[in-house]
Length: 92
Image (tube, rainbow, N blue to C red; front, side, top):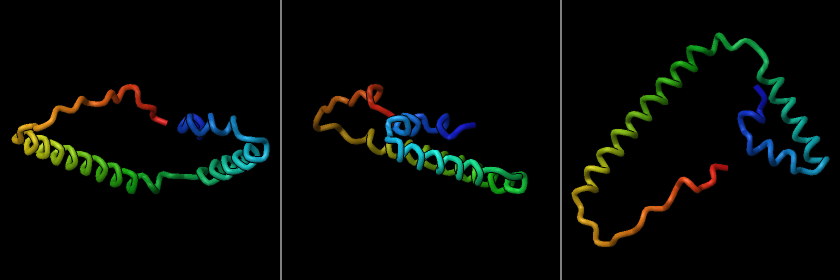
């Protein structure tokens, strides 16, 4: 998989760069691709552990968010503020 597919915004910036910057970026991409070559089977255990920890942290954050929502629900709002429309926010 190409790095540009993983980071489409970076690909856009890459095409907008000048020739010298584009050449440098191509060299960086080639260096990253070379570094990613190899056998990663020995790292599967570490990756599984990292994923389990990530999931655990996400669950703890979700629990914390729920507790905060419950605590905030007990307060009476003094000011009405409209919620921002997050659908129109740019991701990149």
